[in-house]
Length: 191
Image (cartoon, rainbow, N blue to C red; front, side, top):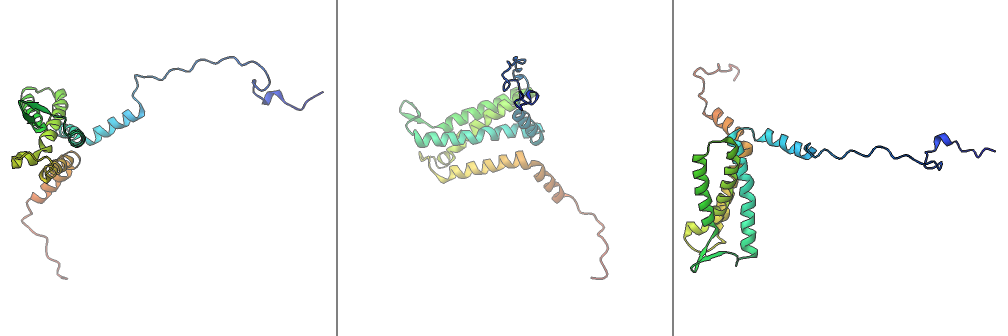
């Protein structure tokens, strides 16, 4: 007697047959970059192609988080600082030291592979020094002054414009500074 069930349309598990295990799944190739890594690399190469842009990009990339980190640390942990012989050593000191070191390294090291690293250190030093710009402008121990924010915003605007809009500003300047032709187009008689 037929039960009306066609065993050919039912999988082997449903029919009660044992299933032989298939080949094990191959592990993901860890040497191959992920889709996200490939996309980040492509965008990086599209936006940052020249050595000048690359250096400025790394300055910007380290400047912003260093500035934010310094502000957060000073706000939440104002007691966290180095005290040498009763003197509070502000982080602008570390910034100035880093700026001096990176300037010296930039003069000594000509290898292109070191440019991003030196630029990144320069960005850290720049952020630490200019975070306390108001203090060294007024020579007063007042961390929360407006000039520090203004200086950081000016530097940030310059870095962003250099990295992302540098070509635009160069082309605009060339066009504006281009000499006008000596012969002007003939005037329209209908005017």
